[in-house]
Amino acid sequence: MKKNQVFKMLLSLILIVSMFGGFTSGKASAAQSFTKPATGTYTSGFGWRTMDGVTSFHYGQDIANNNTNSPITASAAGTVIKSETHSSYGEWILVRHSIGGKTYETAYAHMITGSRKVGVGSTVAQGQLLGYMGSTGNSTGQHLHFELHVGTWNGSRTNAVDPIPYLNGTINVAPTYHEYDGTYASLRTKSLTGGSTINLYGNPGYGIIGTLDVGDQFKVYSRALGSDQKYYYAVGGGYVHQDNGTVTQYTGSVKSGTTVYVYDAPNGNVKQAISAGSTYTLIGARDGWYAIDSTNWFKATDLNVTK
Image (cartoon, rainbow, N blue to C red; front, side, top):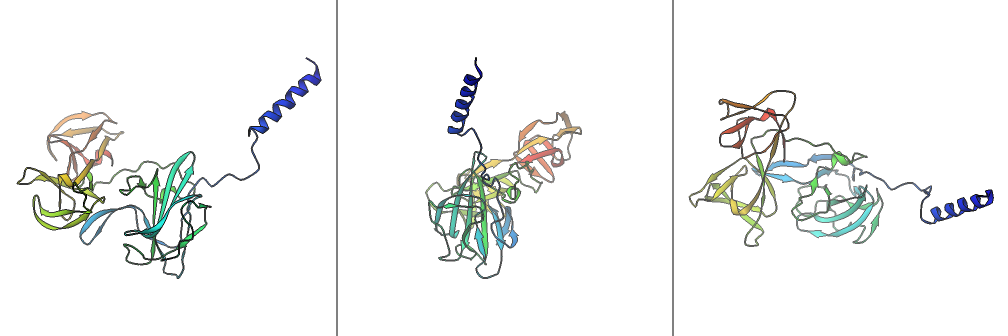
């Protein structure tokens, strides 16, 4: 093949590749991380908390700042999905992001009335002003309630994660294990009648002491049969009827590096050694032990427990 023919073929190939985006541009790539959306102090973290004697799950991080007109900014570039007033969130905005081919959504709640700067469908840049910190909705003082969801937001907030490990470039988050606290499962409240609340009992099956909002999540400490032969779950502060909760049991994986035994009861007799990595669904917790059934118990220190 002649040299001029080779040159023509190479030139044609270059033109084709350039037409279909084979060459990268000199533009900077979009931010591939999240940033803290407001200046202030973290005052209430992601996870379980006790308020008014009831332990419930907090699905975000609260950031407080008493300064007037404290700005709230987009944690990452994205598209506004919601910009509205909500009974619990107050004035809030929900932004959808695509990072590394994965969908995330961030929620910004309790803004000052009338301070929202963007509407549904708006495209926002990382760090762009969304509104100002307030105390609208279910709030006891000026702060931002910030949520991050791996996937899309839903009313039960089943995709919510702790935002802090995702901030400033840390997208791949290592698994965290549950620390023993006497619980073995979580319960998400539900109503079979379509109501917004369910009854909280002082004892298994009797003695209504209050109500819980539907969709809230609680730790489960134990369960007991009521006189109606239905189970009632102890959630710390009261009992929930089995029909009013979806229970998710924790999973325990046997730790490596030491010999682990299963016992017939807490502080009971050794039954056998168990291989590292063996995984079980937990059905109970008591005095620093986990049960996988009524006659097989592990020391809590021998398991890596995930929710």
